Image 1 (cartoon, rainbow, N blue to C red):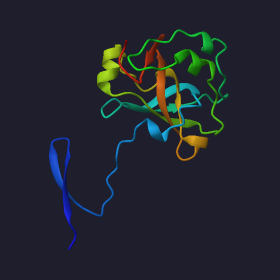
Image 2: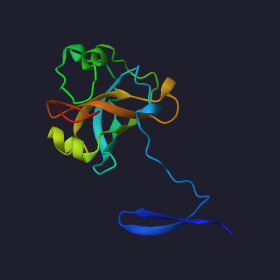
Image 3: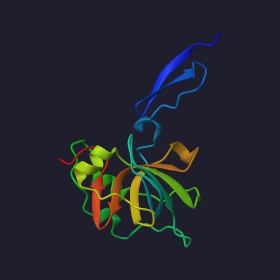
Image 4: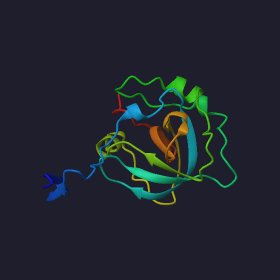
Length: 160
C-alpha cells in the first residue's frame, strides 16, 4: 500500500501518492552567478504571481547585442550585497541560440517594494541575470536586474 501525503494547493488540500515527485522551488545555488547574461526582447506569457513572477522573453530575430552603455548604467542599491557595477561590466550574451528564454523575476512583494509596474505581454524589457552552469538544461534566466519602462530594478533583495 502506498503512503499518501497531504499537500495544500492555494487553500485546497489534495492527497498525493508519496512516490509522486513534488516540484520544489529552487534558490540561487542552481545558477552560475559568476557569469552574468544579458537578454532583451518582448515579454510573452507573463505570469505575475508568487512564488515569483515569470515570463517568456522573445528575443529579437536580428540577434542580440550588448548595449554600449550597459557597464555605465545606473543600478539601484539593494539591501543585499550585490556588486552591480561588476555585474554590468562583466555582462555577456548567451552562447545558446534559443529564440525564447524563460525569465524568473522576484517575488511579487519585492517587485512591489521596488514600485515595479506589472509587465504585460508585448512589453519590451531587458534583464541581466544568471543561467545554469555551462548554459545546460532549459533556457532559463534568473534575473538580477530588470530594465523596464525606463527604470532599473534590483531583484535579489529589497531597495536599500
